[in-house]
Every structure is written in structure tokens, then in C-alpha cells.
Image 1: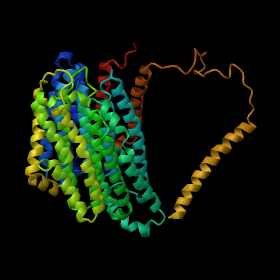
Image 2 (image 1 turned 180 degrees about the vertical axis):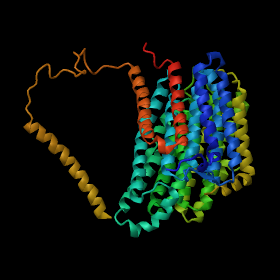
Image 3 (image 1 turned 90 degrees about the vertical axis):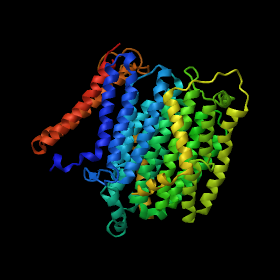
Image 4 (image 1 turned 180 degrees about the horizontal axis):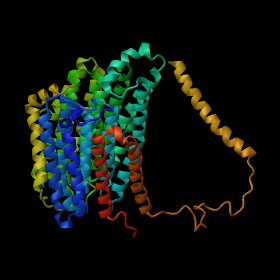
Length: 485
Length: 118
């Protein structure tokens, strides 16, 4: 065995190492700092994220590879790392005031966010199924703990336990799928799988079945992690019970990480099997958007509404897998960037509107008249809702437009028609939030809420980002187009 | 392809049949002579106190999970120790990092009071 320090390009995993080191420092600080000094843990966490971001920036365009292809820094990986780090940064900013209000300022909370981010970056920057699995587990286990962080709250406990049991089950499917693929092809490297598959017809007769079963199990496993429809049951309960910043986190980072892995697996490794799996993705896409949108119509809880909306958005993104091709992949990257901004912004407003005794309810009627009392929150909530439903001046419209148009170009007109009808259904429940905030009279005399600086910053940056990318999408589009693997 | 599915189907069928067969066989040939001592819970040879179906203190779970972590650590250390000479200095550093990471965890749970029995 020729292990030596020289073979390894440490620069490739510098962002991950940074996050790990900061995570451990935060764990130790949590153990040894006195209670009144723990506020600095949050600030250390975002400094770690910024440092890791700088290392990623330094890696952009390098196309390095290390650990025999298990870690690499192609533009696709770096683009996703940017997304993960930005979403974690916003989540930490949201958490600063949230934890203070909950009187739960703790270092291990931030440590878990950093570890989850590390896992996501691992998932996006590898060509190996085993490393994807490893990253996925780091993310999932951190999230199981984080969603149960309000220990005294039964709903939070329920969220954590449900998430854990169903997540562990889905992981079983995923690992079995990977094992079957390894069993039939003898490798877990995605590029090698891509090369080997055309040869299977002649060299591996009869092993096709294992391969197909493995691909099917992978779809089930990832379908759970991105919450597409037959595997979406956990999401509304987790969103309702988990602390609001963690619900925002789940909808942003881990979901994008799941898509990063899916893109690499299905549009690279198994791209020659496309005629076989395209129907599955077609069905998943239609089911996700229709079920998500129809169930969202009935919700009275804003967090549950966002959970179902998130399921519907997964359906829109899955259209790109059916369409295939470079414009679809860059469309997914664009969509995910915009989706992260919209969702984190909307959740920042939910956090500002909540209070300690009311945390976990988030009913529509609590928002009645709130838009007039808090014009800042009201206006930005309107922007986020319009963008989520896909209205033109916002970036949400363009995100949908690019994915739908790539599907039209590939000839999937029926799917696009279903998606457009779904978008129209979704307008009803997104606008209902705005109607409640501006047109319903308040039930009791409400006072304007005071918005902490960090939350205000998140709302402002995400809101302006959505408008800016809606009017000038070209820089982000170019970046997305250059980041295709 | 269809014959491959048939294999799986046969496998499934035989799996179910085998389990049924074993259960029925043991019911047919095993002698059944219960007495009160036999029906008691087994607690490592001690005389049992009460029923087995009670709520256990959650600390058992914490202890078990911390124990498992260090158990796995040893499983990982043994093969490394066996081929230590051929792996060389790099693997030594790697192992130190691995143990240090677990050590951070131990310090954390210790300080948080997870090792205290209250």
C-alpha cells in the first residue's frame, strides 16, 4: 500500500476541513463556556462559514481531484458549495436571534449546522457513490438532532423521531441500491459506471437485473431525501415541529445537496439508461407538483404550507431530469439558487413574527393585519410569495421559465402544461398569505414587532436578491451555465 | 430478463416456505413442559425483580450509544495495529486524528454530564 502525504491534494478538501475544525471548536466551547458567554458561538459559526466560502472561492475553476477521484473541485461542486455555504450563513444569522428568544443559546446547535454543511459539500464534490452516501448520512444525522432541538416541545420531538425513523429506512434503500450497483458493475465511481454501462450488454449478461434494481432503490432513497411525492410524508410534520430556522435549513441546503447527487448520478452515470428511467421521473414530477399544490390549498399553518409548497417545487425541478441536456442542468442550478433565497427569506419573516410562547403555531390568523402594522415584513413577504408562485418581476418566474422552456425544447409539452396548471393553482394559496397580511382586519390589537438586526439583514438581502436576479439574471445564469459537469 | 425476476420470485417463495417449515417442525418435535421457573424473565442468572415490560431510564441508552462508539473505535484500531509497520507514518497521523475526533466527543459528553448517573 502506498499511502503517503504527497499523493493527496489537501487544497481540495480545505473547505470541509475548515468546517470540521470550527465544528469541534464549537462543541468544546459549548462544554466549557459559562452560560452567559455562549452568544459568541453563533458568531464563531458564521466566521467558519465565511472562511470556508473563501477557500471555495479560491478553488473555483481549478478542476482538481484528490483521494483517487473521491474528492474533486469541478465548477459544479464549487457552485453547489457556494449554495450550501450561503444558505447555512443565512440560517446561522436567523438562529442568532431565534435562539436568544428561546433562551437556548448553545454551541452544539451551531456545530451541528456546520457538520451538516460539511456533509452537503461532500455530497456535491465527489464522483463516488460511497462518499455521496457518507455525506448524506452526516447531513441526515445532524438534521435528526436539530429538528428535535426544542426538547420540551412535543411537536419538536415528534418531528425528530419521525424524521429519524423514516430517514433511516430510506437510507437502507439507498445503501442497498449502491450495493447492487457495485455488485453488478464492480465499481462505485460514477464516471467508471458511465463508461462500463454500454459494455454491460456483452460482458455482463444476466446482471442487468441487479443494475436495474439498484437504480430503482437509488431513486427511492433520494426521493425520500428530496421529498418527492410518494416519499414526502415526513416533510410537513418535520417543518411544523422543527425550530423555524432548522425548517428553513432543511428546505434549502440538504434538498439542494440531494439534487446535486441526483444530477450527477442520473444525468452522468446512468445517462445512457435514460429511456428506462425517464418515465419514473415523469411520474414523480407530476405526482409531486400536483399533490404538493392540492394539499397546500387546505393548510392553515404557514410552516406546513411552505412544506407542501416545497414538495411542489421539487416536482418543478424534476421536470429538468426528464428534459435532460445542458440547459436543463443549468436551469436546475438557477432554480435552486433562487429557491434557497425565497425560502430562507420567507422563514426569516416567520421567525420575526413568532414569539417564545407562540412558537410552533404560525397560524394564518396570527398574520391577519400584520402587513399594515409591519410594512417592512409585509412588503417582503409579498415579494417572497409572488416569487414562490412565479410572478414576472421576481426571479421565481425566470427560474420556472428556464426549466419549463428546456422541457418544451426537448418535446415534453404535456409535462409543461401540467406544470403551468399547477403553478396557477399555487397562486391561490401563496396570495392567501398576502391577503391575510394586508386585507384582513387584525383579531386583536397587535403591536408592530421589533426585528433584530440579523433577521432584518437576511430578509433584506434575500428579498433584494430575488428582485435583482429577476431583472438581471444574466450573471447568475452564466455562472450556472459554466458550472455544468 | 423475465427469468431473472423468476429467480427472485422463487427466492421469495422458498424464503417464506422455509421459515414456515422450521416453525412447524419445531412445534411438532419439541417437548413442551412449562413450569413457573422456566417462564420467568432471564436476567443474566439473577433472580428477576418485576416484569421486563417497564420504562427504562434513558441513561441506559446514552451509555449504550457511547459504548458503541468506542467499541467501533477499537474495531478500527485493531486492523491498523496489525499492519502498522507497512502503513507507516501517514497512517499513524491519520489514526491520531481519528482518535482526537472521538476524544473531542468524549470531552463533550463528559462535560455535559452524560456519564453521570443521577
